[in-house]
Image (cartoon, rainbow, N blue to C red; front, side):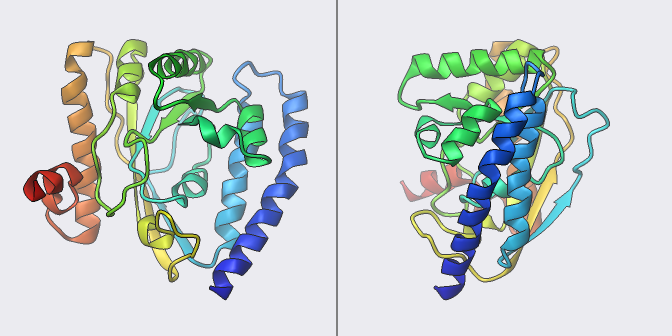
Length: 255
């Protein structure tokens, strides 16, 4: 408990310190995609990872020849720790995030200044507007990031993906890059403020998935293929069968 309190105090101080950094970047950023402002905001995640002794991040496949070539990145979602840890990737992505986060003081301000995209998950119009804004960022040569599960897992498995990211990728003819993260579920569990024991956290970029020849009719198979690739990678890391990672299969078996 004491370790968690100290980490939160140090992390909170870092977040407050970062506000003028992002504000100044925003003031002088003339890029229509606010690329440099967003990039400096993500560097907060790098700093948070460094001051947290509970997180030992290992990144594989994290190189992009051209960081301004746009992709739609999708990632499984295990805990709050995913956000700062994925931000350790060395390029800018505009994040689709639930609208409530943008109302928070300090963090919410920086998300707005950086051009991240709010989504009201209970409002279909909000979702459509978010995808429209995301498509504009792709046209401005800035990638977009989505947690297609929509919320953090409650059991460490990968649950059902929503359609939004895949609809965006197909309509904009933009490749998808799956990101796989594992180890953060135990790092800080949902509904808990305590950090787990120090552990390795694995983050890997899988090969891009081409969408140039696809139509909306291909969305279910595209979504299934990307989700399956993420599940298989986690299963390989944990040395279990993919069925043990598939939250949909688990719900079906328990029904």
